[in-house]
Length: 199
Image (cartoon, rainbow, N blue to C red):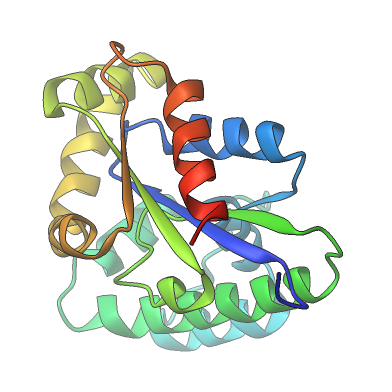
């Protein structure tokens, strides 16, 4: 075991169930977990990150009630010029935040979840990666079940943004967990953890 924790990366498309797998792995290993998406949303409020994004978009990404301006950010992410610039700011912030978080951990393992593990460069922060896969129709239904008002639009938007990531996951992930409801997630996680421990 290295001096720092061994980092297991969990990735997958929207509605695949990667958050469930992250939590299962955390419980099986009794290890802390880091959710890149949750931390990214928090980091928009970091004074330095907020100032950089405001300068880029010419508008504060946080409204007067302290909420993210989702329409503003979504519009920027669908703009070919603004998207790489906005992603560059937030991806770098997440990498730095994770590095600080990891440095404070004394556990043998930590679990990192990212929907864009490879295209964001977060794959450089993990020792091995697990793709969580599920049929597209099932992922769409799960997304709509979580948000009956905006789920269908969210699924379509995120899927279009993550086409490159889907290709990278398929080629680069070390392991795959199938979350179609037929095979036990716990058993699949246990089998992969045995393999990881024998690497």
